Amino acid sequence: MAKTSTTTQGLRAAIERSGYYPALVAEAVEAAVGGEPIRSYLVHQETTFDQNEVRRHVTVLVLTDHRFIVSHTDEQAADSTSPTPYATTSTESVKLGRISSIVVSRVVANPESYKPGTLPREVVLTIGWGAVSRIDLEPAACGDPNCEADHGYTGNSTADDLSLRVSEAGTDRRPCVRHSPSRRPSPRRPRTPPADDAAPDGLGPPPRTAHRRLRARPEYGSGSLADLLPTLAAGLDVPGMTAAISELTPADRNCVFLIDGLGWEQLKAHPEDAPFMASLLATSRGGTGRPLTAGYPATTATSLASVGTGLPPGAHGLPGYTVRNPDTGELMNQLRWQPWAPPGPWQPYPTVFQLAHEAGVHAAQVSSPTFEHTPLTKVALSGGTFLGRLSGEDRVDLAAEQLAAGDRSLIYTYFAEVDGAGHRYGVDSDTWRGQLMYADRLAQRLAEQLPPRSALYVTADHGMIDVPFDEQHRIDFDEDWELSAGVALLGGEGRARHVYAVPGAANDVLTCWREVLGEQFWVASRDEAIAAGWFGPQIDERVYGRIGDVVAAARDDVLLIASEREPKESAMVGNHGSMTPAEQLVPLLEVRS
Picture (cartoon, rainbow, N blue to C red):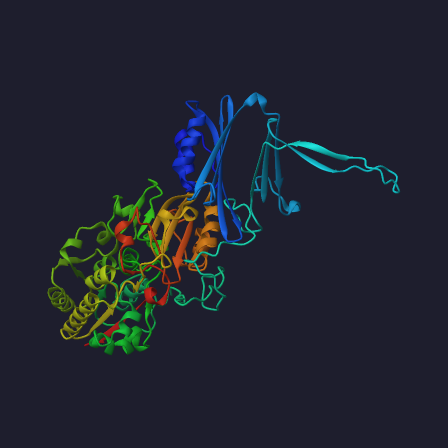
């Protein structure tokens, strides 16, 4: 990945981003540079494929006021001279006065439509200073076709001190790979025949593996979490609200019980652990027996904001677990709201609870007292009255009381422990099943206390899948030089990544990520993901920069962890975030009094 800058710190950062023995390369370059100020530099990493072997090479060019410095580093496999793999590094310092020629060759596609500023398809930089020449010889001949005499050889001498080629192959823009007659068949990323399961619009169908999962398209505007409260509020005559989920029948009193982490597929697979909720599966989504979709990404901060605001992620502005704050350039954890950002500007829209309260509807949220003053509650679930209760029984009892407290009511209550057990121990673990049983009893307890003219809706923010602890299923970004090259920030979570590239490297990062992960993840550019509707039908301008330059959603039972920067998240058994049915589909069970 070739980048230029003008500082010593920038040079070291570029070498580290290349991911290729950065300490060794940096030490050799810095020793050659000495104390001279660096005017510009270029770090160019090449990977070559030799049958079953992968060889890496990095070239570093540095320009100072008086010298041109060239450094090459190669890795070698164990051989007769060394029982272990080894690397060789060489540096050459050339006085600027010795440089005799500089040749820049550019290859431009479709020259008839070329516009100034268009990037070339290939650039070859050749610099000569007379230290190395290449001699090309061929047999000499005379003009007599019948002559059999030996005329010796003729040829020419060409300066060949340095030649550096950066190119794209068609639309596969990947300067970080120079010669690739065959791509690397990594054992953790199996190459398999294609299948016809659904893929994001315009990104091609994914191939099938043993753990392939179809994609569940978020049904924004008709059947997503963002459509639930506006539909209920429309039935309560709240101005500006639309009944987007057409299957639901209005009720005067509405209660939403959200069980964190209880997906549609998990509930269907465990009827013996949740007999009450399993008996309601046919009532889901207005008696159609169909689920809702969470929206993308299928993660708590995003889904709760979608529920509370009635807006998709592209509008409410919480499009992931961690996203870049364009104002500071830092990653922000939107669940914990760290580092802190002003909640109002981050999510400026009123919640449905606020609008309902203003319209005279009795609105209340019954949840853990620890959530009362959090920024996430403020931007997503505030409006009316917040009532904190510790135990699940106290919450559902109070929710039933609040439901009866108004002639028109909109009440929300929440239970988090199913999600926590899934993260720590996994779906199907005894602990997870125990929490599911408890949640089922709470749902039944609440249903049995419904006042007249009431509707109870039991739903969730996302589902969950377990990911095995092995290299095939858990790809470590912090140990993968290909994936980390050109990446400034890694956001999102293991199954729904936002990738923020260093300036100018977005296209290269996209190409590399597609090449490395494209059979296990849906990988899209920011604009492709937006155009495909991943975050909703439209994106607010303030939200655009929060979305990654590259967006990657897992379609296998895989996880892109970051063991060093995200040790806790990387150790979780159960995970979510992507668009597979196990994560994306959530129930909308209904009980009416």
